[in-house]
Amino acid sequence: MFIVIIEKFFSTFKIPDIVLLILSIVSLFILILSFHKTPHAYSYWRKILGLFVLLFTTTFIYFVIDKYVSRLPDPIIPYILYILLFTIFLGVRIGVLLSIITIFLIEYYLYEPRYIFGITHHPLNIVFISFGLMSGVAIGHEIRKHQQKIEKHSQDLDLLVKAKDQFTAIAVHELKTPLTAISLYSQMLDKQNKNETASKTVQKSIQTITRETGKLTYMINDLLDFSRFQRNKFQLNAEVFNLADLCKERIAIAKTLFPHHIFILRQYVKNTAIYGDRIAIDRVITNLLTNAGKYSFPKSTIIVTLYKRYNSFIICVKDKGVGIDKNHLDKIFEPFYQVESGKKGLGLGLHIAKSIIELHNGKIWAESKIDKGTAFYIRLPVNFQKS
Ligand code: ADP
Image (cartoon, rainbow, N blue to C red; front, side, top):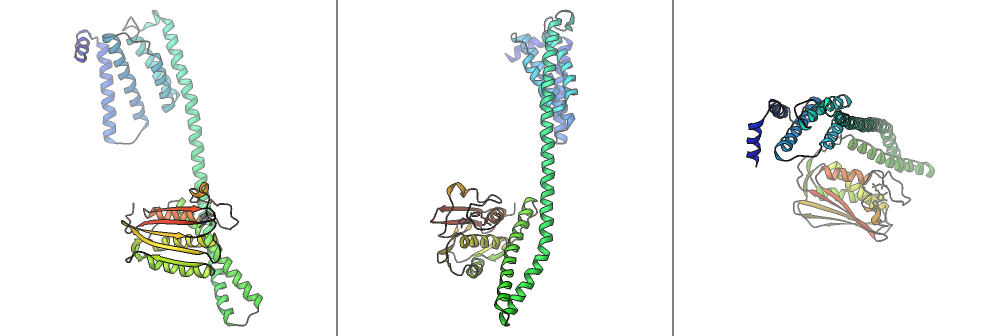
């Protein structure tokens, strides 16, 4: 069948048919060549060339089928769609230019009698095609305008987000410097007052200052890290360290913060050397232990379990506290998300924890039952590969 069509074509072809065939092949060839030279780049000229290929080859195929296989219906609908696409991608000028070329192509090749520009023999057809194609241009223009508006809005939004991130980074950084000084001096005064005989009120005031600056420093560090993650500026400094030792250290500190809770470490693996960012993983474990203390009751037990699964360590921090409703469970890792609980915080800790663990190619998740307690799990590869 294919051979028959080719034979028929070459036995009855006229010069314009070959011109159209050559035009299709040459434009296709240039297009392929341009992709070969600079792959992936969608330049303006490449788009125009691509659309010309589309127009010439479809006209040619349509023409051959219509002439040698069987009569086809009027091709105006697909052509209107083409013009619509041309206008959306390349603007009104190209849309109008291609419409004019299309009118000639249709007129010259596809309407009987062929090879004659047909204004003299069916003027209504010309009016009909022109009207159809120009409506394509008009609709395409409107769609393009909306598209450009959306693009502009999204660019403005990007700029705003960048400005906000920069503002947060600078503001938080500036806040941190004086806070560090306050924190240092209040700790010094606290130590001194324990030895000397300052009045009870002074001692209590200094203790309050020390505690509150500690909380403030914690929050500011959260904001700093959050801003770093937003700007992709958070970098891991990986080293080999002992994960069990880190857990023990953190549990000892958590005991001083929550002296009425009972902390237990269950270690089911002997060698706990891991390659990762010690300070970052420290932040995650601290956050989980602090939350476990914050959202459970004095005298309740907090169990930290450490074991190995395949090539990863699993750390589980389990409390017997208020629990988290299942509707909130997958949202608690989103930034600034807090379940109504009356406890103060920024709602950033778990988001930062998730970002840190994912940078280590690990995973963090939670299981919880309301009023029964919550278990947070971290899976950390023993030897993560930086991606
Ligand atoms: P923050 O504790 O500063 O509010 P986080 O990101 O650490 O922020 O936690 C987000 C929310 O998840 C908390 O507000 C709390 O409602 C809930 N949550 C976290 N840990 C626990 C836990 N162990 N038990 C119950 N709720 C928790």
